[in-house]
Structure formats: structure tokens, C-alpha cells
Image (cartoon, rainbow, N blue to C red):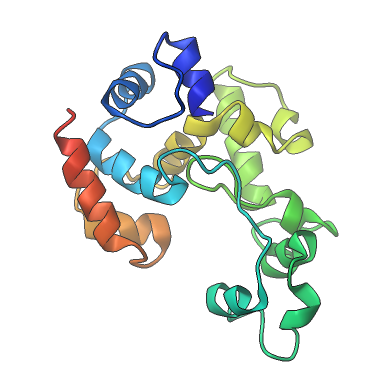
Length: 196
């Protein structure tokens, strides 16, 4: 994750996202519109610190976050059971087809890549760039956060044609599917604009 990137490029390896780390990420990955990119990605990943989706929810939180899948009748069966929650929420969609795919292909990486189809597309993207071998990601999904953390966000921006969207509201809708955290995304983007 961030500490590994910082060590690799001779930065202070404190795991904190700041101007020096941001500028090095932009340089290494040739990020277009870095303030907009980091405004979204750092909101989604808590400043590049979240490695994977935490599916260990309480009953009240499940009802709040996933009302489509949980109600007062079934919520207590899932409380505190990440595997079961992942399979209920993500199973049989996003290319998930096997019994535990929902949990196995839960959100990981800087932009929380989710679902078998997205993992496979990401792997194919990495293979085309010569960065990984075929089936490397599918056999070890944790590599999304362990080895290809920033790349997962770049892949998301590439495949969703987001690089030229500079309006924070429109970009948030594309990244989030709504406007969750819009003010934080705006604040971050404005702060990061001063770094570049």
C-alpha cells in the first residue's frame, strides 16, 4: 500500500498521504487532473489507508448501508458475519457466480474494486501492461491492495473514461453512483489543487 510505494520511491515511509507522495504518484503513473483524481480516490479510501471493504457490520449499520438486502426480519442472521454479508450483498451479480464469490471479490484497493467481473477486467488490464500474469489476481484477490493498490484506481478511471471529467459533482456521480460525501470530495479537490 502507501508505505510500500513510499519506500520504493525513496519517500518518508510514514503511510500518510501528503504533497510529496501525491506528486510522486502523479509522476510515476502520469495522472491527468491529479486534484480531481485524488479528491475522489482519497475520499473513497480514507487517504489511501483502507485496503479492503470491512463487511463486519452491526444490525443497525446493515439496515442503513444495505436496506435493499436487509430488513428487520433477516438482519440478525447476518450481523457480524462478513462472509455471509458479502455473499448476500454481492452474490450472483457483478460476475459473481460461485458460492463465496460475493465475499471473495469484495471491495479492495484504492477505489474498492468489487465483483468477479471487475477483478478479471483489472487483471486483464494489468496483463496487457505486463504488470502481472494471467490468473494472478483471480487466484489471490488480496493482491489488489497488496501489490496493485493505486493501479486499481487508475484502472477504474481508465475503464470508466473519467480522466476528462473535471467537475466534482459529475465525477462524484460517476465514481459513487450518487453524491455521497460530495462536500468532502469538493474540499479535498480544492486542497489538492494547491499541491500541483
